[in-house]
Image (cartoon, rainbow, N blue to C red; front, side):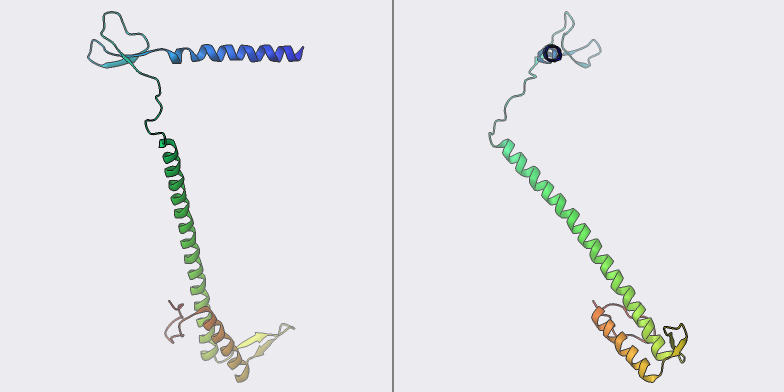
Length: 166
């Protein structure tokens, strides 16, 4: 019973679709109305000179046109994707450069503190202040200089923070 109902529904749908497609096969006309405007329609009024328009789609004159169009479309999509990738890479490079610049500024600030501040200290595991002696200070300067070399920072200038080498 369900199968028969499904079959009848399918046939009914097919008939409705075919009937809806019939008007699309009708002719299209072009004519001028009494005001001189161009009008398009499927039935021209009586007593008007109407021109029948060809509404059928003709195959392309070039058999390779579809293939060429697909190739051009693929090339366009490839270029668009390349632009997106280039923009993403440029943004990443900019972010990396800003990170290095900030790290160089921080390292330059540490160097300035290590060289100029009289009382430098760190906290030990008990949370107590431990003041740096000259040897510990020189070791911290050497470590900081190594960090700056690894980052590619320019040498610290006494007037301001260092910037990355270009």
